Image (tube, rainbow, N blue to C red):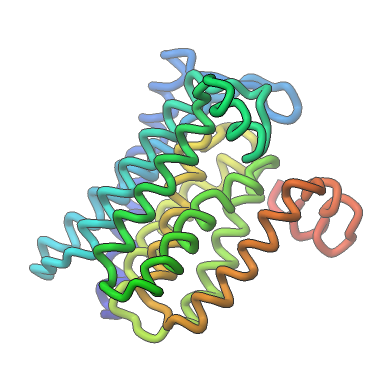
Length: 271
């Protein structure tokens, strides 16, 4: 499957070179803009590039290899769904309500937020994907939480240019080494091909991928982990993800990074 991963990377890279300026121009003309952390107005929803290119690349790979796999079908369905709720959140989301607790409290008060919708849909698509990936009940439960928490993980770090993408690249490398097979590596390599083109735009704060981008990026890590790791390794990932999400409700990751010289140096690379 090595040539498939290389083909996926190259295909996504070419499509992204073609599509990135077109989508960026479309967003600017449509005034789909938002203020970044410096209060500069820049295009948001560039994660649309991720959705289109990943879908096209995997469709090409499956056509060339005659690769009819229900797991990939499940990934693409959940990928598009999470992209959709992310897009809704980017366009009409209420940014005043923060954190998982905030959205849950709002829901039980009878006020549905886009963040609450994202959390609910995220859980449901994780359940949908997990029920297709395996028929072992214990593993289904583990997969559900692995996929759901990975989906939200990237969003937690998407607060400064390039930060969440660096996290994605690091986790991709780690998971490529901890996986038990390479049959689905092309999923990650396809996404890395997109990032190869998009990352400079993000680092230089010329565009934001938005929740649509962070959602599909996190989902990709979650599904890849569920597909390619044994139950013990997945349980370790789940434990780490749970700790990170608990910490996220109590501390600011941005402040932690700013106060650590090594983390701050890595965070600033490329800006």
